[in-house]
Amino acid sequence: MKKLVITDSTTIRRKVHAYLREQILSGEIGSHERLIEAKIAKEIGTSRTPVREALHTLEMEGLLESIPRVGYKVNTVSDREVDEICEIRTAIETLAVRWAIEKAHKKLVRDLRKNIAVTEQRVAQGEVRAYVDLDAQFHEVIAGLSGSKRLLELAQALRRHMVRYRVQSIYVPDNVLRGINGHKAILSAIETGNLKTAAKAIKNHLEQSKKDILLYAFHERTEEKR
Image 1 (tube, rainbow, N blue to C red):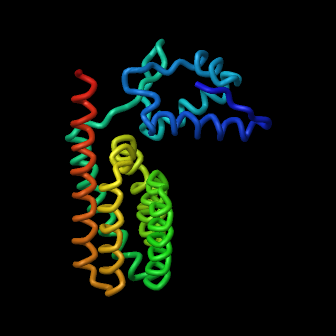
Image 2 (image 1 turned 45 degrees about the vertical axis):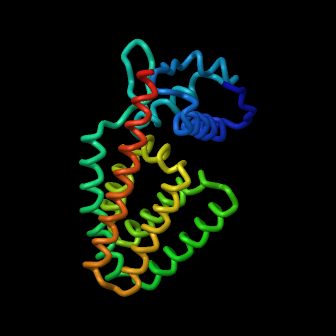
Image 3 (image 1 turned 30 degrees about the vertical axis):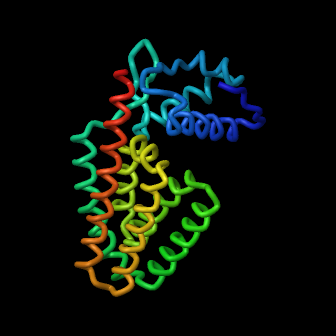
């Protein structure tokens, strides 16, 4: 790992977390590796405290699993968990879109249009990885405008549980284009105010995401066995 040049403590904690998170999501830290606090601190050139806090936060986000007296390892998501989470997300986001349309229809349409426009622009510029955060923002716009803090928290937690497989599968350009088209279909349904069509668009989008995730997971497991 490369050294990080950081000054104040708040920035240190934030940058160490962001750095380790990106290393995991990009696959630089694989599922076979063990993350040990002292070793990481030495490698990146910082004290153990921000590393300890970063590792704990990443565990809370579902990216890492703690191994007593050893350290951490990258968490993986089973096929069954992906299927379960996608189904729950469909139910939650269907409710979210209904409430958002009822409470803030115009703002919902405006914010989703802006998100899609920015996404298409960034991807066209070759920034495929930008889709990761923009996809999250798209879904959080809907959940946030539902007016329910509890619903937003549930939606965010579910997304974090499958973020590693989701992010890696998103890095495939064809998956990104399918994802954008899924967002467009959701927006089109929301613009008409048709809840049934919007619910179907959300279900189709998440079903496609699930297929992409499981396909990536299959290939990853195949590569690890070689």
